[in-house]
Image (cartoon, rainbow, N blue to C red):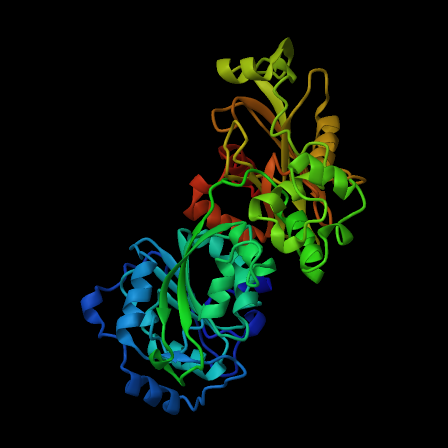
Length: 489
């Protein structure tokens, strides 16, 4: 039986949480390899009157509580889509497509369109409208709860949304928090929310939402859209923002710890931050080391200050160690017999045979834990890898190395690794003898931010599709291990 995650990306109308919608019992298989039709086959986006007629036909009366304000200005719609810089190989995820005012400008320009619509009547209408377009998937789902993990296999992925006023912040957190698969995002929200994304310290708009988004994205307000561009007219202006991912500009830090600290700090934004942070280390010591005022309030600390504070309160012993450059390895022959010893640098520079372990951590749902390697790593920086992987120290046995690496990289103890198989040295493994292990484990991993940027639990079927479509997203050693684990090696 397929898991909910495996079912979640079948084409058709799906209900919130991946359930089949009552409005449509049909699912379509889709074909990621289909070439989109030329733009000339599609008419221009509907006019304001046609959008109102479409709403009437679908039996939809705009709901203010749901923040339903439909864009009716075709020129603005086309301009918004152009800011996304759509390319033929892109997948675009549009949240809140409504009547398709933005969608129409994307049909035929990108490889795949994923539409996530909360209103069941609009979702059904979109599915009917695009029923002959297998590259367009319609999901009846809450954008704040849609599972974005199913998008990784479709990279490059871009995000587009005329987001509802009532839940825009929750939708942004769901889709754009680290780790995410997106290389660009264009969003429209009420102006006051976009202003918060660009807010500076010591202003009333500056807060948790600002820091959450800006810790992973560069944000630029591109346009203010007046109320008359919508039906019904809102009472306030909207703004369009263009978001581009940061590429390591802030350095390595634990984003989960970061989120915990900013939530604490802004719980009472006008009070001194010392009252809300952990007792150890002492705030006075942290403030002195970072050149901050001991009486500082949360709103007075910049993004860079909060990242520095996060690092100060990160007590992982390896938070500053992307790799142990002084390591001594056993050099081995093709029979895995020790013939010498050498430093890590010498082993890699000369391509000497040595030893390593890879471990696949599996949870109770059968999902694999993947780690994204830090940009500070000397080999395969910034790509996805096995749950845990590491070299054997000189004189160390494979089982002992497996236990040590589990603890050091993920904070996993008290489990017994089971050997899956062995891989002879090859270019893909970096000329390592590799023993692959598997462990069953439930929990939240604790990893060093200098070594690991992020983690992700993913079903085997999703991993298969991602590796098949985007092998460049992975360390080559992981791909070899995955083929072994799946019985294809």
